[in-house]
Image (cartoon, rainbow, N blue to C red; front, side, top):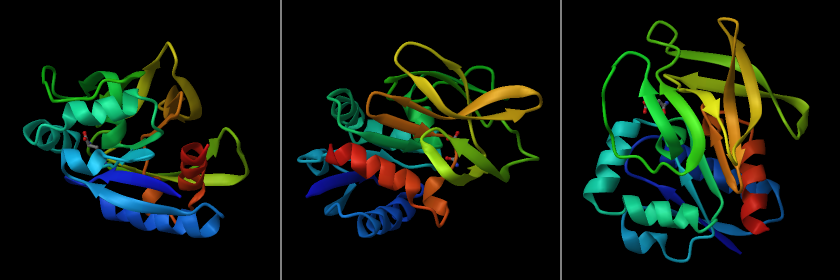
Length: 205
Ligand code: GLN
């Protein structure tokens, strides 16, 4: 039995919840899902999800409620972590914005990646694209990008699992580091549970 917590301040936490239940149903792994809003909710977790949404809002609420550093501890203790879109921004050690030159926001800063927020700009706020993901050869994965960031820098322990070409630039859209998975797209919004299944098998290990 595994217990997965989803940080539930803002953004797509219910969609992750539904996708996790589906991933449990499609594997033989038994699990339960908890929504995380307070320090107490972090107790006994085997893995954690940080959803997409608005990274400034998620960061500010986590900071205000005082659990930002507790979440960071859970991740740094090696508990498998799935972070999507705004979640990936939260994990990055280097963050800048495509438009706003100077800004600061509470972040977790645990992953050796540099991201640019709102990389694809306003006009192309949303798009979908078939992705080739390392270790997922059966069929492409449909990536849904919503005001997505881009991973433009990667070093140390992090590595790229999927890339796309945009304006002739190679951009990383899925990276991992140890037992952390970070996507700039939204796997919880597809009908495809493969990324959540990969995550729960990491948690189960
Ligand atoms: N643009 C958002 C941010 O900067 C991320 C968008 C998303 O999570 N879909 O936090």
